[in-house]
Image (cartoon, rainbow, N blue to C red; front, side, top):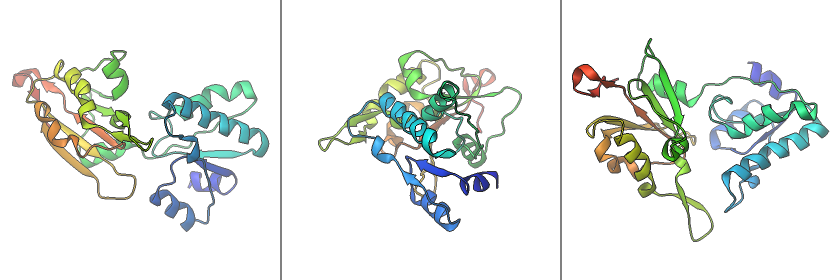
Length: 233
């Protein structure tokens, strides 16, 4: 309700006008400005994020108040939002974050997974592969943003390449037994039914063809009392 109230009072911008989002906005009589053109072919992702934040800053100085619409919870692995929050004070702008249902909420509800005293961790795939982030195999884990493993295509687009998941899986095999079960969680933002496919870590390629930009991997914690096998869901 808070989000709807705010959206009725502002100019809204989004880079992700999916059918679901369009339907929601239209059914509530809300307009939006599509800025997905900022995702230019061949442009580095960091530059895209910086351009999105700069665009919103520029509009906010002229049209305030404005809103930036993003999926799920804005504070979960959303680099443009991070840049906006960090850069707003220097520009004399104030920010207000309206929480939403994140991909984490959706996945743990559908598995289902009860987050207990041992805790829970969410990590992006890129820093895990680069070695700038570490994983604790004793806790339930979500490895997000698998869709960042893309390659350029002949038409200048970016395509997911299952083979590019190999470095990530090799990194995981350093932490988990080869037969440890992992679940590929596909929360397709187009409105399609979510797909959850569980395979042994060593057989990850069986699920790789279905990977898309919205795929997250769930990894249950290892259980030292069970020879290092997973605790299950």
